[in-house]
Amino acid sequence: MQWTLLQVALGGAAGSVARYLVTAGTARGFGTGFPLGTLAVNVAGSLAMGVLFVLLTREGRWSPLLMTGVLGGFTTFSAFSLDAFALWERGAWLAAAAYVVLSVVLSLAGLAGGIAMARGLA
Image 1 (tube, rainbow, N blue to C red):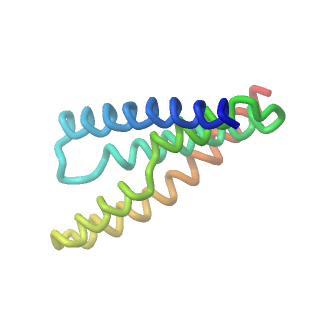
Image 2: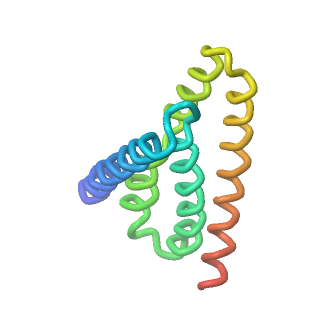
């Protein structure tokens, strides 16, 4: 149990740092008018979750580190919710709605794409 908790903690730290780097880099490159960084992180994280779901289901040894830790720290629903609310509160209702729909649809597509990719590799 202690090894599992250590994996989750280390993975979560790495995932959080990666999320920060992606969202900060995206904000620098594209501005902060639309939460593109959080959208990118959630879609990429969903794709990676799909791949890992297929590759690690047979042998769950690295699931706590990679799926719960890294991807749990990398993607975050709370940041998504805050970004959507901030757009809504600023009166950008269309952008808020587009962000919510794009986040859900593209993240599900990313997950399905990751599963399909991994099944093709396995």
